[in-house]
Length: 187
Image (tube, rainbow, N blue to C red; front, side, top):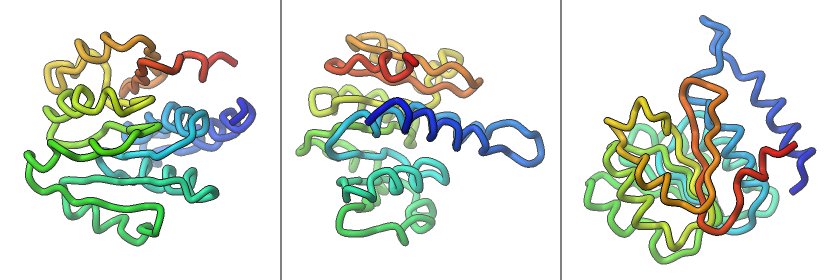
């Protein structure tokens, strides 16, 4: 995809505000890097943790080409909120037990994996576990102040390519061993 599409998407997302404060929702701060990763790749997309911002936008981005999208969640309420989006190309998987995450996504090559799931300790485990099967990880809540919760810095810093999207307090990091993700933001 070209940079114009990314710029237009970023302009759209910059209008998403929380009414009470006038600030971007901390649950939406991953949208720009997530869109950049999806529009600059081809192939299946996996979402680890559903959300009011990520799930609908991933669905919308994958819809035109019916690009495979797998949304995985450990909370039944979140799955129930988005199951109306399920289709032949967008599937949902409910994983109620922590051990259930151990094999999720292993039998596929993923262009993009969005990491924003619970429990917090699974994030680093799943990034490491899926590393050889993923072109780009988009990791929400990656600011170092939360490293005591997520403990991901040592894994994120081991990737060949890394871009920290630090415009907002709640940060997002893109990492890859094969794609220079920094180039997505060179305008």
